[in-house]
Image 1 (cartoon, each protein chain N blue to C red):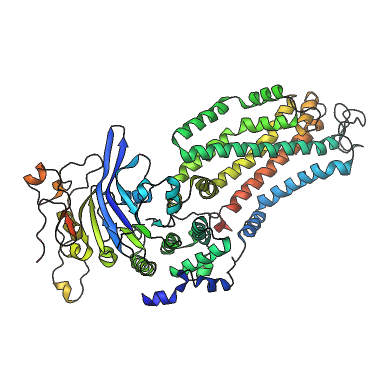
Image 2: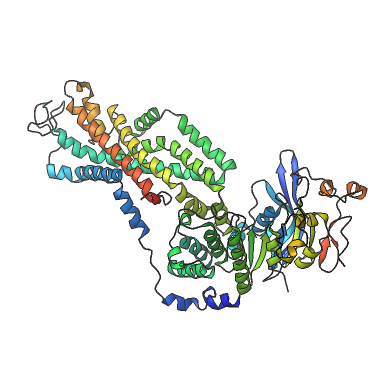
Length: 307
Length: 331
């Protein structure tokens, strides 16, 4: 016993200061860097980020570099790609390449913002319901069900019609109609995790409810939520497309959905007018899905052993 | 000396649709600084419920309906939730049975030990990590510097339990509750963990409530022992004297169930077959008012079956037993 006490003075607070003089051992690799490396080593992560970076670059810098107003009529309608406007013109004679570049901004902005709204509302509802259970759970889940039983597209259309066809309204409408699945997923994860030993141990160590929700349970619930968030980006992009296709987008802001919507009557004669923006939407959704998958693999320490 | 923990008449009740069900009945024990009290008994006797009641972490439906729990004089059973949170992890902490699942899989063990220090002692990240490293060394984890940044899944069961001990003791609590801390571990590791607990206790003066069915460990490290049966304390006293001369037939039966290793000359002294106690602990809600052990007891007679269970009664120096027919005290 005395040997132990002599060998381990570090438990007493006083000698701790001398201990502090010694350099702290650093982790062999920074965990953040390790996750990043793992992410980039994953082929789908690399491919997904290349796609997304490419699309973001095109949307942010493209309009400046190309310099053509997408609403300007540059020539005869329905010119096929490969001619003077590189990707042809649409039913009004507007430059499709210019519209794709400019439209990417709105579409991606709506996608990311709406997904953010979805995740914030969904995780908040799900976490509170799953953690507290009982009446809180019952009340929050009733609200969730209320939103869930409404036909999403119809509800979003009503919101946009009521509050105006503006891009901010579209974004909020998409966020409001699409959070229930995220809330359910988060709730299920919290219900599963809250009874586990390490949560009890954290309680026994004096953690309060907010700490338990945010620091103990949420990180463990993160992988499926991250995946669902990336899926939400894809869904939001598609949703924006659907609303614009139905003529409920913001007519003053070029977006990929708007392009498809305006040209849909001529899809058979001038396929490029709808196929090109359609392909852009496809690429964006594919990109975020690949990235989401890779992020999930990289941030989950239990899966790290794979590398 | 004032006890660190004094449990007085602790009664815990489970509320069921068909009425309240007693879980713990008028349980009393206390433990002083640097001492260890062992709670023993079969599964379902209320040992873990006692631990959770002291921590103020009873599961939904269970509630303390009577009695006091004093931690250094303060009645923590009546404390505000915020006060209780401040005490948990700093003045009283708990080690759980399953080291495999009691650590958070997404944080390194260093971060987890440091977290308690940051919560309770408002240490900075660096200072807390340094203390965490010191704690890892104190629980004798080899290559502590490397383990500090290890995730729980990278450690063995014994090491994880050491980490749990390090977490529990990081804030130098007055009271440590160890709920079957070694059940999930190898026998050799069990002995190491008990030795470690004892060594740290000697150094920090922590009072320990040890919940276990390992009577060997009880004999080894507990100063006093309380035997629980069906939510009632049926015998308590000084460990040596209880172990040497158990007075309640249940205690005697428990000890008969413990294998003794006899070697050399002692091997010839007759190793009878391991005995068992017939029957099961009566489940919650089916506990009679009479001695709950009566239907498993070889000594039960009309007195036992017709009268409510006797309260714990003085039975020698620092001994108490709740039985109509206690075994005669060993000469």
